Image (tube, rainbow, N blue to C red; front, side):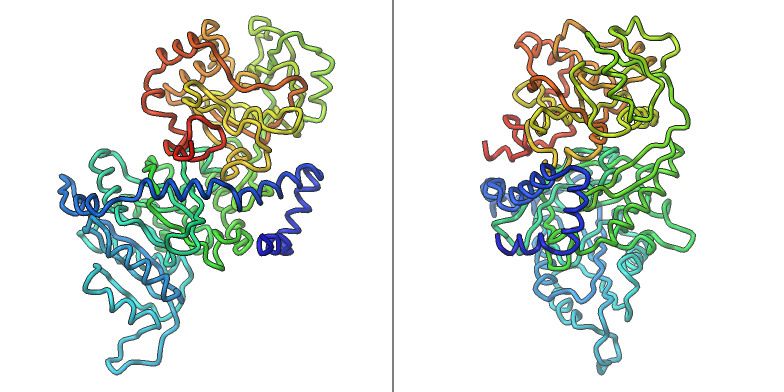
Length: 570
């Protein structure tokens, strides 16, 4: 613990602490510090050891996979740029490929390490060349010595060109030089491609390790594709596999696939540029091990602050290219995450729908919001005919962030957004609402319920993201959309908001949670509840999501808890 506290005193972390204190006060700072210590020494890590042991594949299963014959047998070209790679890391990486149960792959190792004195046969070599030679007979390797360092993107682009020129390659994969993969990684990706012929981009879950089989590894399990979450952070990360034919589409006029101008966030830049061209698919299995090396962001996010600046620039460019609501991107206090602020060209009339409103108090609450075009009414039927947006808001919710209405309206102006909701905190400044998960407690549950907002699993409680449902206590929707979908079904009682959101999603509309619009409940706070009959009615109305699981909640996570602990720990 003393080493961890020592790292917390790094000047960059002190600067970050000052930022948190200036925005959230002493309470927010203390919660953040407690959260980080909990993250470091959480029982979740012990739970993950049990989870890993439970899901470890037997030798018999690995042998069965090696004998299995797929109808479709893709060939994966794995691009791995090398630069002064630690010998033990490189050997562990190559051993993990040697152990693969699906063998139709090729490694493209691009070595930019310094050259050794010229060898007798005049072929350039580096300190890594002899290690590669040890594996040439057991692993399909294409090894190239560049002779100079072109940067992470330049080195990777050389690998892209080599792989794309190989006619046998069907898919391109990206792997870091100091990480390693599970023996069934390629088998699982090939299995997925056989089951989903439309899949052109695939990612998986991962963990963060200090060394192979690290007992204190931290799991990073992810939702299925989440458009708004990837605009908040690079949650996709590893292990990225892409249909070979997609890459020429995003190749720049300078011949780059990963752009050197965004080194540090080159993968994030690549993913954002691929987004308009293909849907991202997800394998909910931990198949990749991201090493927390001394100079990596996995070890300490402050190691590569330039990467976050590059991420901010590529996200800004992406948003501008989408011809959406004008927006600016900034880095909040969470390393590696981004906040998008929308700049509205006008203020459409918003009708705030609330029961028994103290109208003067509502107007006073939103004085600092800089959004003046709103009214307060008690029923949708009483809304001004000129209003374009309905904002359902409990009468005991008070805004605690600035520009709450504008933040919600901005997202609502985005294409294919059905509704948006803000964050709700209780009187103890803990989370009441940060999105709803279908299936928790055999019904619908509030994710991160009663947790400090400064500490949630992978910080998702502080990031804009899609959910299957959000709370009607703080829900904004276009009036036209509300009427098109016949509003809330009152027969479903406390779950009428969930039913409404699921009906929106069934037509392809997004349901978005935006924590930058934050409210505090002045009265008693409670989680989402409903009677057994109401739950049964919701299940009957939406059987698929209950049968197959909430796509925005990883199936490895517990349905009996809301803090994203693993199911194994129940």
